[in-house]
Length: 379
Ligand code: SF4
Ligand code: FES
Image 1 (tube, rainbow, N blue to C red):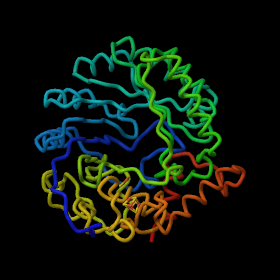
Image 2: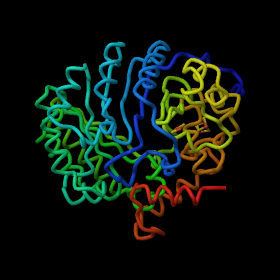
Image 3: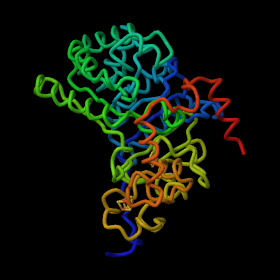
């Protein structure tokens, strides 16, 4: 078994996530935006985004996701899609559907948008509207029909957690009714607002098993008509995910204010200064910046990862989860049962089996709560 130290050659990024804005009409309890999003500065202008798209394409990015917040709140989305298409990206709009209409979808289609991923919170109006703290269910339903009518494949994303996971069968029936070709049932990842609300969201093992069985039955019923992805919450695993396929390996995220990250959660990591596209080129940020080089390769790893044969497959898991759960991003992701901190995960899972124990009320993502959390985090 060899010790850590060998460095992987840095390849070019393939995946650009353009987080156009942190603004959002919805207030989802599991939002992955930073809990202190109100602290960050002005959004990039259209010209600045165009420069980012060109630089990232020149670096080698081929897949481009427009997300947020709600990317439809930017009225230059159509122009950015058009430029991205001209540059040769495969483009994906990740949206709640709020802000879409006949005129805009026609313009996005004409501009070359390849793919739309529409999110629902649940199959029932009551829970959809509760979890997003908005009356959006009926609108989303209409937007799903609009997307279909414009010839896009119907791609639905539903984030699963304790509050809605027992509705998996009804969610899949709704997807079938909407003519979905792809459904992503993505169990919540516990970062951002989902981490704050984890005691309300982490499902029990029994719920998870029932949902997986229901998904499997549905797959057998619909066959090839619908591809269904069921993403298990990693708290129930004993080895971590190879997060982002390794830090600074293929994925680059540009935040609304131009700060560049190797994953959408890294903003909160201590001791790192992530540069902005306003002050440096994407090329320098990707290849040269200390922040992007911090967790590349294996030299930063501690025991047990540094001598573990699995480090070449999972890169020690997720740096952001290691930080959130152990206080040190260089620790093994505590999802790993070889981590000395694994008990923090098993304790959260144990609490989820008796779900009356939440210490505080559920917090919706909104500016007031963001300011309060930001003040609570201030040194
Ligand atoms: Fe992965 Fe580290 Fe666990 Fe080994 S000890 S399986 S490298 S997280
Ligand atoms: Fe940041 Fe995994 S989300 S490294």
